[in-house]
Image 1 (cartoon, rainbow, N blue to C red):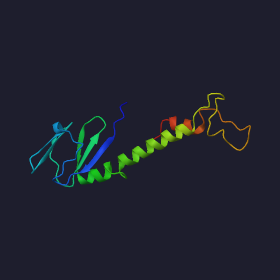
Image 2: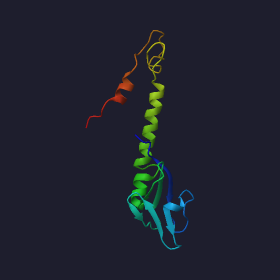
Image 3: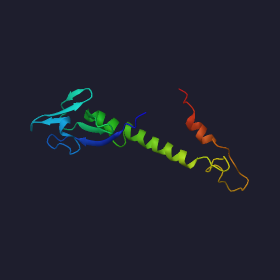
Length: 131
């Protein structure tokens, strides 16, 4: 799976073209911006969002979609924070190569305390969610 995520976000002000847009991705005649997207050419109005992705494509989004999907507290921002939290949790709950135990869960106050890896936390992350 490709690590596709937004790497640039810009709210179009009607005049300033963001520096990260490549010349082959847009045309601007000092009146109307035209942006080449995977879905065809888009003509953003002031207040619309321009989103650059890791694969080099550009998305144009309305102000509502930009705020609810692409803003830091929108769906995409929350998803990226959740993915980072899961990755961090997996790093903490790694398998000890010598004992086979979960390093985080087995770091309890008792010297004989050990939790085999995968621990309940890793098993919960690996389970398919129930609808």
